[in-house]
Image (cartoon, rainbow, N blue to C red; front, top):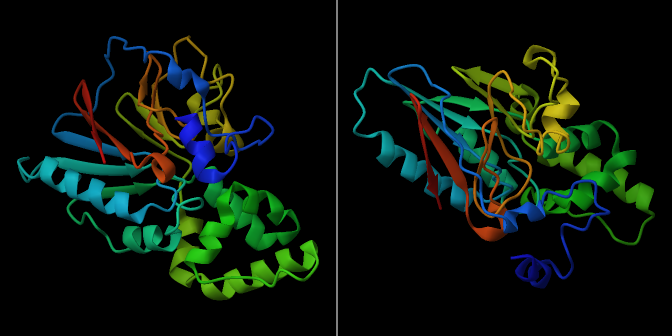
Length: 275
């Protein structure tokens, strides 16, 4: 898989020197399957969707699968779709992803939109373009392109960042900016805690800090102790979903693998939909 990614990007997109390294080489190890005892309330089905990263085409496909999946349910059942963040960057249609989400694609479901670190970086850049090189290194130029924004190359780096910010503020619709502002850091239901990246172990869930919810990897990923709830997260790319006693990771690298993963939870059962 990594060889393929190098061929596509022209270099290793998950170089250890990149603080936004989303790849975990433990994907080469077998996925641990653990007894599953966490529970969702009765007559409720949850669909949690992993990192989309500009792949509006895959999001449409997973929505179609979700519609087909819940079609046999009684009308009285509660259906919840939880998006785990990172809607933008890297893929070529970030604008299309947000357009699709704003269009209420699953009107019979409750929709929960969580914030990813990429949305946080874009918002930071729109306020402080001086730090914009970080966002652009994380795939932000693909997002700018999806909004039709280009900047002249023959100006200083600082001027380019300022120009990029100004053009983005003009190009990004106010509805999209409001969407970014409305994103939540967390959502809880039954025995599950949903967030973008994970949690800091041994800190109560009600005291988790946004930077950890958006960015954490270690010590969360290797933590084998008990958490208050099972954490469902994205952020760290694995070839297949990861299930451990305390977490379920569902970022399967949609922007380059073509596999957008959706976790389906009902009572004490779990399964997956994938593009």
